[in-house]
Length: 110
Image (cartoon, helix red, strand yellow):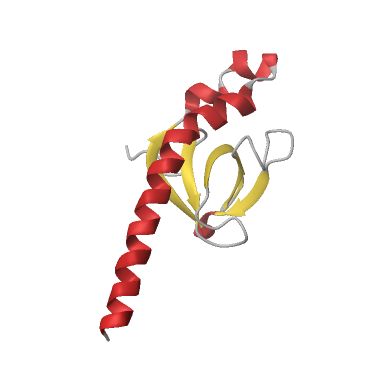
């Protein structure tokens, strides 16, 4: 059985919108082709962002430990999400910079 790419706790990267190239965690499945995402900083669990699946890219990481019932009851889930996304965000930003530099070099050479 194939695992669902957009399951609760999955880390995703936004590909469209004002939050492009930012990492989020899927916190709920809304319906056909939509999920609710949060990053614990700009989008908290109290007000998650509704996003279409075609505007997201699933990452191979999973942060279900940030959405445990203990964190949800204690109100520390946003902090746990930020803590889980911090190293992934740094890595994601470095990869994005590398791609940008390569694209700029290709444009200069042409």
